[in-house]
Image: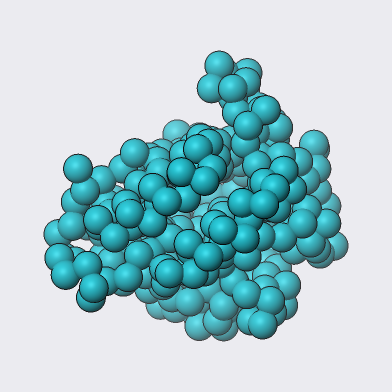
Amino acid sequence: MSTTEGLSHDDGAVPASAARMYDYYLGGSHYLPVDEELAERVVQLLPQTPMIMRANRAFLRRAVRMCAASGIRQFLDLGAGIPTQGPVHEVARAVRPDARVVYVDNDDAAVRQSRELLQGVPFSAAIHGDLRDADAVLSDADVVSLIDFDEPVALLFLSVLQFIPDSDDPFGVVEAYRDALAPGSHLVISHATDEGIGGHAGRITDIYAQSENPIRYRRSADVLRFFGDFHLCEPGLVHIPRWRPEGTGEEREHVGQVLGAAGVGIKLGATV
């Protein structure tokens, strides 16, 4: 059952959102019928879509734990959607109780629901921001109050860069954030790729074009460009479930069926 408090129940008034479709795929409750309708059309074409989203979320948890274990206590999650199903602040604080987390999204409903979920949670914030405007995000009052960019930061782009068209210069956008980070910072990226998806890529693109967030598949070689001169941690840029798997049954199931690329890079410097 979907939870739609704070949203219009007029499906014509609220277009589908990738953030809420993602929540639907994960088995959450923060979506509208219009989100469910489009998501189900994607699932009809690519039945393993919910599995791909779970694998992406599992990668997020593994990457966040790795960052926290490396000493990072600041996390900036861009295009975060709704922080449910193992959110960054819970995962990070299981390793570093002093972790600070800021979630950024441009979906009004996602931000509202995120703020409700974060009520009473210290050192966490959800802000409304367009990740394409790095200057505005980095200077936001909540970001500045929680994140010290003179210290290492974990910067997260989890399955969001595929929603930035080439015309908006996604590589330049990520570079602007990379340049703002201190040495020792980690860049965590997962991205939908068209490798292995066959002729469905175009049809899925057409479905997402009916939402607020049209999708763009990219090749792994293009995803690699987002890391710039950051040093890729082992095992490099790989299929999502192959990034430091923990050997669970679900992960073994994901290996042969999950599409997309994922990796973590480190900004080298004297403090690494």
